[in-house]
Length: 210
Ligand SMILES: C[S@@+](CC[C@H](N)C(=O)[O-])C[C@H]1O[C@@H](n2cnc3c(N)ncnc32)[C@H](O)[C@@H]1O
Image 1 (cartoon, protein in one colour):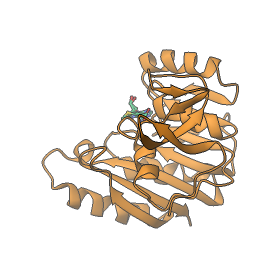
Image 2 (cartoon, protein in one colour; image 1 turned 180 degrees about the horizontal axis):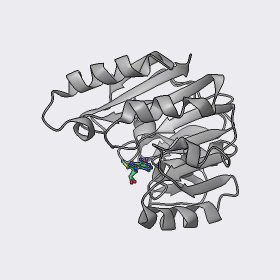
Image 3 (cartoon, helix red, strand yellow; image 1 turned 45 degrees about the vertical axis):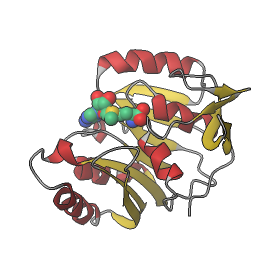
């Protein structure tokens, strides 16, 4: 069952209990005082929490986030976590991400390629508590395996796999099976679930570093 960490709460938005964090709004999300809605339809990690996957984020402090884009999800992560390193290789979204980080002193945007962890190993600390990955590119399992080096021994991986990024023609379940097999070299999978209705043809995976 999902353990919500300190700083993430279910609060009432439009008559429904929805996930929220405290921080400056980023993407036009509704607010309730200084709490802002964490929209699971816009965030794979939000969908993993919302759908009750076995994501235990209690006690999470340091985080590496791969595929940060403009900062929709990583802004929520930085609202409840400690040092949060956000990797994104496209310059345009990184410009927005830098704006998001201006309001969050613990969020560090890095214009880097997640397939080349050696290019940021001198900046990102090791023994991190949590690796979040949402890169939507070919070779998603290899990226997670290559970045396991930053995690502490019992560190947690929250991974979103987009089937079409691996192979547009293959059956998503075939893609997901291959990904689970490839992850096994570095991780023990704790839970995996499709992210419908929030995100079509995506698999959420929760795993512990081996
Ligand atoms: C689905 S979007 C991420 C959305 C974001 N995680 C969120 O929820 O706010 C995928 C992002 O991964 C980035 N990306 C893809 N391959 C990457 C790589 N090798 N290194 C870094 N970023 C990558 C893309 O540029 C894109 O911004």
